[in-house]
Image 1 (tube, rainbow, N blue to C red):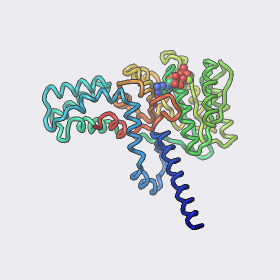
Image 2 (image 1 turned 45 degrees about the horizontal axis):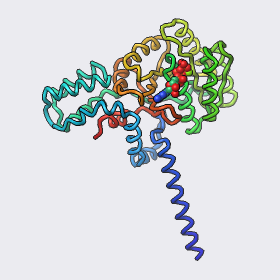
Image 3 (image 1 turned 60 degrees about the horizontal axis):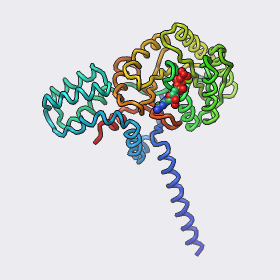
Length: 350
Ligand SMILES: Nc1nc2c(ncn2[C@@H]2O[C@H](COP(=O)(O)OP(=O)(O)OP(=O)(O)O)[C@@H](O)[C@H]2O)c(=O)[nH]1
Ligand SMILES: [Mg+2]
C-alpha cells in the first residue's frame, strides 16, 4: 500500500513538472538564449539539437510576422519545380520588392532563378537565397575587461522603441542571472525616465535617473558608479531620440559614449534601434547615426506591425551591420534573438 502511494505521488509530481515546463515554454516561446562570444559547453549542442520547443517558436514567429508572411503567399503558391516561366519570375520579383528586401537582393535572386531554376521548388529557392544573404556574425558581448562593467548603449530616433527594447532586454538579462542597472540617459523629457523606472520595477533591474534637462553624461556616469559599487553585471543605457539631423543630438551621443566607455565602464555593444514599419526610411535614419556612434548591432522593432519584413535583408546589405534582435510586439517577451533560419522559415515554409 505504502509503495503504491509513493509511486502515485511520484507520477503526480512528474506530471505537474511537465505541465509547468510546457506552460513556461508557451509563455515565452521565442526567448532563445543570446549568443555570447564565449566557448559554449558541449552539452548544450545536444540539448539544442533535440529541443522540442522549436516548432512552437516557428509558429510564434509565423503568427507575429503574419503580415510579412502573407506577402509571400504568391511565392509559396508556385508549385512548379525546375525552370520558371516569365510570369513566375515576375511574381517573385514583385513579391520580393513589396516585402522590401531591396532592389539589389531582388535582382541577385532573380538572376539566380533564371540561371539555375528551382530544382526543389520556388519557395525553397527563394528561402535559400534569402538565407545566403543573412550570414553576418550576430554574437552579442555581455562581458567587459576585468574590473570593468559592460555597457550596452541604445541609440535611435524618437519612438522607434529604444526604451521598450531596454525593458525587454533587462528581463532577458535578469532571467539569465545577471544583475542589471538601467541608465536613464534620455533626460529630454521627464516621462522618459519614468518609463524606464517602470521597466526597472517590472524586471527587477536597478535604475539611475535624474531630473528633466540634466546632463545625460552624468546620468550614465552615476549609473556606472552604482553598477561598480554593487558589482552589477551590465548597464543598459537609454538615450534621447530627438531628430537625427540635429547635430546636437549626435554630439550628445558621442559624449555619452565617451563617458560610458571610461573606467569603470566599457561599451561592449552599441545598438541602433530601427522601426521596421518605416521601411526604407529606417535606412536613411540609420546612416545619420552610424557616423556618430560606433554601432555594433541593430535592433529592428515592430516587425509585427509591418508586411515589409524583408527590410531585415535590405538593412544588413546596405549598412553592413548585423540585426541582432527583433521586436515582435509590445510585451516583455516580444523580443527575440534574430535567427535567419527561423525568420526565413516563418516567411516561406509551407
Ligand atoms: N508592436 C510593437 N510595438 C513596439 C515594439 N517596440 C516598441 N513598441 C512600441 O513603440 C512605442 C514607442 O516605444 P518607446 O520604447 O517609447 O520608443 P523610444 O525609442 O524610447 O522613444 P523616445 O523615448 O520618444 O525616443 C511604444 O508604444 C512601444 O510599446 C514592437 O516590437 N512591436
Ligand atoms: Mg525612450
